[in-house]
Length: 160
Image 1 (cartoon, rainbow, N blue to C red):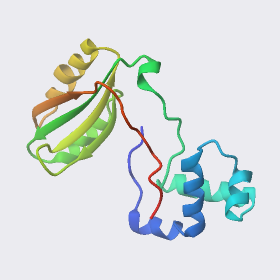
Image 2 (tube, one colour):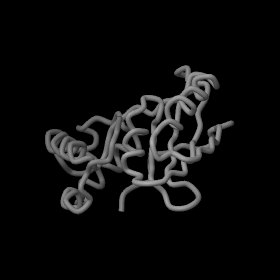
Image 3 (cartoon, rainbow, N blue to C red):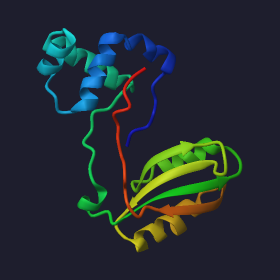
Image 4 (cartoon, helix red, strand yellow):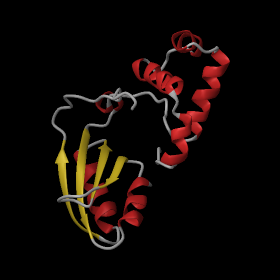
């Protein structure tokens, strides 16, 4: 589970032009070798490895395999809008602790929180909603948006 723990102010010091170039290289191909990245950005393989380690340890980035949930047996994917009362962080933390939930954000707008869920079936989704999410203290209303077709999913938004 990836939980954002980085310190944006502190991490800005890590994000010089070379680190940004390394991130861009990895966004193009997360399996690119440190030697190939080093050649592209003008560093040694060891220096690239050290920078990648610092960036991952600081929570600036992750290098992960992006999969197709349907191919892995998750027949139901949905976004759940949650209206809540009281403190939102404890609710977000409890949602983030659920294996089926891949993404949790506290939002402004019609919903207080959004949670993306991956389930093996409609029955599994119903159990997660009824037996777990709706039982969390402070959750008042949920609205489920079942995904019919994934049209675009990208993680290559670059760096600023």
